Image (cartoon, rainbow, N blue to C red; front, side, top):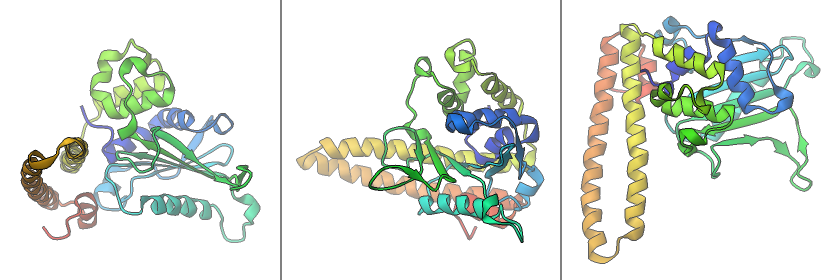
Amino acid sequence: MLNPRVDFVFKKIFGSEENKDILMSFINSVVSAEDQVVDLTLRNPFSSKSYLQGKLVILDIRAVDVSGRHYNIEMQITDQLHYEKRALYYWSDMYAKQLNEGATYSELKKTIGIHVLNFNLMDETDFHNRYYVTNHASQKRAFQDLELHTIELGKFEREMGEVRTTLERWAAFLTKAYTLKESQSSETMQDPEVQKAMRVLETLSLDDDERVVYDGQLRWLRDEDAGLEKSFYEGKIEGHLEGKLEGLLEGELKGELKGKLEGLLEGKLEIAREMATAGIDPELIRRMTGVSDW
């Protein structure tokens, strides 16, 4: 089964015309009651050809609903420097582009950014956090058109039997899709849109070029997950070891870390070479692997 956290698989599921009901269910699980979507129009529906040719380097999903509200949804696999600034830039870009020449400010509509992250970004314990502009003294909301959400999948730790809300079911789908099929009669699978997303994921097929991109991103995703797990255990070791024992294990861990970093670099080079051989756009290769010379 394909991994729905790989960004172009995510957009194939959530950003395709035939799956707008899936996207609406996901958006409605995130936003407040007054911002529920009843219908929407995709502004940049997914195209495999455009993606592989480097015309869709950023795989965000942009949509506008019948009330005029604009939505920007992004699945981000790897951590990036200054991601908070990037999120604001994407929001401002979508907000500003609502105005055509000769239009007035009164035509601007509320814009909501939803960032699904495979890493921890904010110093918060909840996996879903919403951000508004508020008055510091009174804590009253102002500038109502600005709203941002982060969904940090690394903080989603609920077991299948603990999942209750639709957003939790979507988080379970994104993090545990390979086990959801066994839970179709449970609380996790009661949403018809989640069930449809499972069917789409199970039947999704890739051509040769898409498979090269997918395999490269999947290896990157596994490296990221392994890195998070390694950091967790290293932190526990560092916090508990003392004296000579700590020094001994620290030396071993440093050697292990050096070896894994060298292996990771070689793995990225190998991915970049495979993608270049398949004719993938060089800019897309650089974005995915972080390698500029292969």
